[in-house]
Length: 134
View 1 (cartoon, helix red, strand yellow):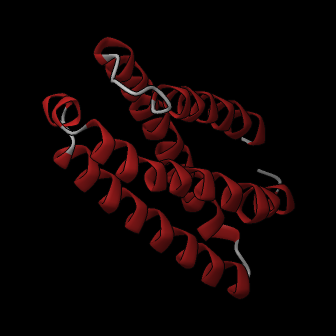
View 2: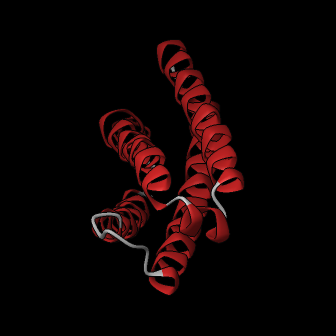
């Protein structure tokens, strides 16, 4: 499972990096931004599915302290998903083209929150999987 997580993390970080680069431009490249957002969304969905699978696996074997940590990670993931869904809903392609500086300003914290989830996976979830033999 670790190898799959690592591959998904790399895919996600590549998409985040691509959007980092695109948002440095003074004007949006609509097709490039749309493609990068689609790649980010796809990679994020893969990560969520893998995260859920890992949590379900760990819930069967987790020590009480790990079970509490898992609940915290699930809460963090749920909050990020809610924020991401709201962001995507508010910033469709038409809206981001109309207010590129506003999009750039609000998208940066969203990308950072995704980096934070990857860091939490690597710091907490993956070692738990290693201990559980997953």
